[in-house]
Length: 202
Image (cartoon, one colour):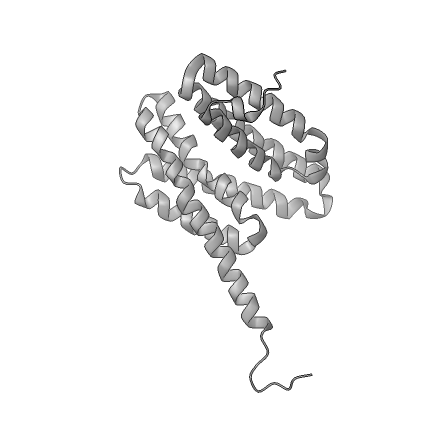
């Protein structure tokens, strides 16, 4: 394996490595402690090879496949290591995958970006409200639905490289929605904890 520091990699490779490192948080802590370093290194080597042999297109194709595989394997690991939270975790990950497929379908069937952007904001808002501490993770996972759908369209011959390169802006509404949901939850719970004006002070 190569052990070159990230600073020596081209910018697209560094960006993919950072996103993948964040997405690894979807795995249970025990799994990350044991395998995360090796997985990051393997992915880095694959990114370098894909970028060297096929450029940006090869790198995007690798990221799309790796993201889908990560989602599936993370779901399996969560189910196998968190017996007390099996149902909730499985339901949550299934919902996130369903949201991603729906956003991808909306994106491919509309010429304008607004419908897909609104779906991203709504879905990440819901997830951010449910789990504020992981608003960044929901934003990344949901935001990846647009690059994944555009990669699929490019493979089929119905998309364009320009659309694929500009779809990173999908992360903007994703983070807006996720952290808006987290903020609303924080405000709502803060108001509930504030004592009424006429209530006796102890």
